[in-house]
Length: 335
Length: 290
Ligand SMILES: Nc1ncnc2c1ncn2[C@@H]1O[C@H](COP(=O)(O)OP(=O)(O)O)[C@@H](O)[C@H]1O
Ligand SMILES: [Mg+2]
Image 1 (cartoon, rainbow over the protein chains, first blue to last red):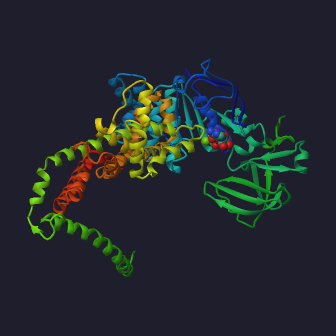
Image 2 (cartoon, chains in turn green, purple):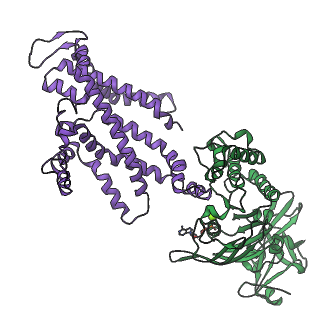
Image 3 (spheres, rainbow over the protein chains, first blue to last red):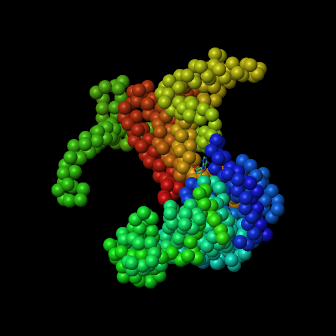
């Protein structure tokens, strides 16, 4: 079991208020991603749950029990650090088995569990190597092995893939997700990369400036962002925002349209006219950065190849069903 | 230094400095070797004669030699043990965030800047003096008989003084090493359920293996030649109790005025230092490999 609940969790470092009241319900077995810009308090929130920092207020419940005064080791959680934090003088076997050794398990039981974990992570051939003799991806796997071997109630990951190259990151992303589903253990995963969040999460927590902006499934966040921040943060390329006359016509202070919901027509169409400033041709997609005069720069995405180039004039037609409306304070207007 | 010209230029520019250093080293060494084969006593000028290895036989078979060799090893070993065993807890303490930490650090480092002769004088006259020393006063305060340090436990007294001087060095090296220990590693150990003691044994101590090795190697080089502290406090005595190799050579040359024998002793000391270095590198040197 690994059901985690946060109730008005606060954290200040001296006079600086970092976490400004977080309420969250994480269901057992789910994969929850904390996402937000750098410095918004993701790591701090994760460390509060882990017990590496003390809360300044509020409650953290694990399976219904308030753990704010419980030391980290007793919370039954395990953590994968951004720097991996492997013990450099211990072999892979020693690293993975350290927690079990500290728990006082018998040696052959430790060996059995370490070998099982190593087999799951394809680390068996490296059990007697030192961390410095491993590649980045292998070290990452050792760090994960150290987390799973203790059969925790939940895994905590702090940007675990940020030190890997792009190709390996995609591969590990899939492996971590698959492993979590296979074990059925609750996971909280911190990242600043919204693509990682969208692809891995059952549910996403969008953090900004120490506050939870929205909590929901990836598609909920994509289709019904609660406010301007979430709308701009989730989705790549970023959503286009338009203010002024066009927004007022629709009864909003700001309207937003995602690049993929702008239909691109040749000049003279019925949409918003503009001139292409930059055209990116990826083969699978075409991204157009369009200077739309008083509307500012708009981004449009076309699936497939579109032979338009910088300097061409186009007209962008928003999909009326996919226009997001926001009020003055940035909150989404529904209906 | 990629091209042949720059290589030639570099070599020709380096030559004078290297040459001077070479001469600087080789002349005293050659002279020492030369003197060690002579009968050469300052009390008996004009009688210099080639005696082959006679001086070495004399120096090595002198009962004082074995005694001083033993004293040297005891001194080096004890000071190493004391500085490391006390340096680790001191460094751990100084790594804690306490008020006035910088001041404490400065105070701990201070003994290292005191000249050996001065610190030996202070210890001899102000601290360990059997009548007027601080320790004697403390002993009397609790009703005990004061220890006459330099008569009752002379070697131990010298060891204390030398250890006091070298403790800052060990502490400082260990402290810098502690500060380079990754905070996340300690947190990982905490998450793994390691107690403070286990964290020290399994995480901190292995991390300190390399700096401890450095401390041992560097201190040994200097401790083999401790002289001023002995000269100022005990003069090698009582008897031979605090005579180490360095002091024995000094007493041969300048107390007994036997230059030949002192030169032979000097060469023996070089050989001993090399033997010790060889074993040290075998024992602890592998910690230095990456
Ligand atoms: N130990 C600390 N003392 C003071 N301020 C801290 C401490 N840890 C984090 N902070 C501050 O808290 C804010 C959030 O940090 P963090 O949680 O690491 O952000 P994120 O992981 O989202 O990038 C930052 O502004 C950071 O400077
Ligand atoms: Mg962070």
